[in-house]
Image (cartoon, rainbow, N blue to C red; front, side, top):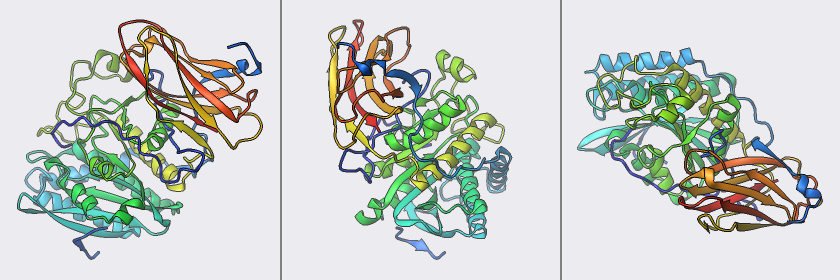
Length: 463
C-alpha cells in the first residue's frame, strides 16, 4: 500500500443501470455494530402497517447468482510461497524496476495464458524506470459491461511484500484461475489486473486509467481492489465508495458471521483511487496496515490491542510468516463471491428508490424526517422490504430510527442505547406487506441525547 495518507470522502457513485424509478443504492454496512491500454505489448395513530416487524441485516434481495467456488487457502498460500521465492532469488523484493517484479509478473502471466486468458503487458515510466501492468481478459461476457478486479504486484524495496501486496495479488490470481477451472461464463466481461509502482503513488493504475477513453471508462461497471488482505493482526474492513459493491461484500461477511468496519485507512491510498477519480464505481477489502488495533476491535476480531494491524508493514519482516491464514482465507472467498455476484448482475434488484438529500439531526431535539416517494409498484409492499440507512454521527447510540409507511404506520428500526461507535450505516429488512407500496415513505431520525451531533446522509428503499 502506498505510504501517503489521504482521507477521501466516500464516493456514492450511482450504478450505471439505474432505472427511471430511482438509482440503485444498496449495500450499506450490515454488522452487529452498525457502523484500454496505450503501450500494450502483444500478448402516528396505529394502522395495519404498525405491525411491520423490524428485522436484522438484510439479504441481498436479488436473484440467486451462480455460487462462487471456495478458493482453497492452500492454493493462495502456494502463490505466496512462489512470490516469496521470486523475491528471495532477486535481491529480496519485487519493487518497481527490479528483476523480482518482472519475474513475478512473467510467472503470473504464464499461469493465466495456460488457463485461457488473453493477457497483455502495459508499459509506463516512473522515476526514469520502465514499469509494467499485467491485464488479463476472460473471453466472453458483454463488452459494454466490464467488471475488473485487481491488486498491486510491487513491493517496497528491501522487503518481499508477502502481505503488501502478495496477499491481494495471490487471491486475485486464484480467483481468476477458478473462473477458468469452473468455466464460469458471466453476463459481464471479466478483466483482472496486477498493477506496478503502486508503492510510488498508484502510478501503474493511474497510467492505465489515464489511457482509457471516456467510452472505455463508461464500460467499466466496477473495479474491485484487494490490497493487504492477510494482515497478521487482522481487521475486516470494507470500502464504502460504492453502495452496490459494498453491499455484496457485506452480505458475504454477514452470512459468515464476521463483523466488519468501513475502511478509512485505505482511502485514496491504493489502486482503486484512480478509478474512483474517473467516476468508475469501486469497492474492495483490506485488513489493516500501520494503524493500531483498538481494544474494541480486538474484542470483535481477536488479535492484539495496542499493536498495528500489520507490525511488518513496509518492513523486511513482511514474509510468509507475516500472514493471518483465517483473514486470507475469508477475504479470498469474499473476493470470489463478489466476482461471481457482480459478474452475473445478481446483485441488482428490481426497484430501488433513494434519497441523497442531507438533513441535519438536531442535537437532543425533535425528530427529522426524510421522504421518498415511491411510484410504480401496485398493491402492498413486499414482506422483505429493505431499508438502507446512512447516518454520519459522533455517537450512534444516541439515535432512534423509524420507518413511516404511506398510510402512517410506523416501525422502529433502531432504539437508542449503549451502542459504542460513530456512524449508523446499516441495512434492515421489514415485513411491509400490510402497507401500500406506492406513496410517500419517510425515514424518521431523532437524536435522543445531547452532546454528539450528526446528519442523515441518505437512505433508500429496495422493493
